Image (cartoon, rainbow, N blue to C red; front, top):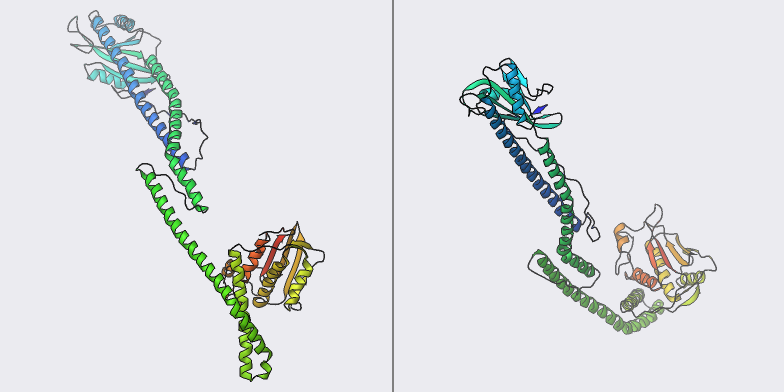
Length: 506
């Protein structure tokens, strides 16, 4: 048996709201997104608010029900005992106490009533358990003249226990008033009906939580769609801006934080568009300048090449110093002519003025011709299986192979190997050397224009455009050039990959 303090009210038990899953008419958002987190936050706040309001309402309602039942029981008990006190013989015997307890009980809807006088204890129901009347309540009855009460739980059910002394001053004396007679009377009133009412109230409230949570989730979803619509527009605009659509702007509505964010985005996009436009103009001017200068240099370079060739041919008839100067001028003029040719070639790629002249080519024959024309046949190990044919631009293939092999001979170490293979409708031409290879920094920039890996190579020669031109020619064929990852004992390995059949393109 559990009891509460004398005269106190019962405390309500904590209730746990049922867990529900809210599904609105729209597709459920990802829980790790901003929209999902916003909906979860709103639903959690709604659940907490509903549970808190429900708990408070339940506590107040339960207290009100119990207080009303308690007041009614006290009034009935007070009135019934007062009415029957005048008929009680004092000092009473056991028989008169029993009759008194039974008559009081009949006026309290059959509640258990006990009457005590010194060594006598009488009960309206002799078989009832009397332990519901606690020592604390007996002590309170002896100490006070008013009606004392206590709520207890017995057998899993709530009970209200009332106690008072019987006064004998007059026929109108009430319980707990007048001159004490030494008679104590107790009544045990059931609160089961009130408990059922409060339980029904809890079930009704719990049933109402589900639609409340569903409604909160629906409203949160609608609010999230409304609030986050500008964010989604901004995200789409950002993606389009990232793809190069610099003229994209978003609409600015209102004066809130989202409008401020849209304004900042538009300002950023405008500044970026202006900056990129200036850079593109400068790049176009620089390319045009390089192309114009390169073409202007071709005529005087042709004359210089012709004169330096004549001087080199007659160098044996000149004095040693003059002969050395003539040979130096001839060599440097040739380098300058190659640089100008490379600049003109790269400017044609930039201007998209390059076209393929496609023919069916025997790869073994084409690679041998490239090596032989440059005097590399004895310096390069060539693995050239016969019968591999492809449709491509032979001149541009020559440029690619010459740049790859020349780069390996200048910067690598022997032996330099060229390997041609064909598989899965793709042609591969690999050029490998046994030098120190490329450092990671040099590998990242090896195809950049004018890049020279001085720190990774023993020497740095050429214009720095050879690998860039080779890659542009490979792309023109629909292929690419790849640098293999470094391996112990192997230098740089470049591999050209192009389709076996390449159609004419511009």
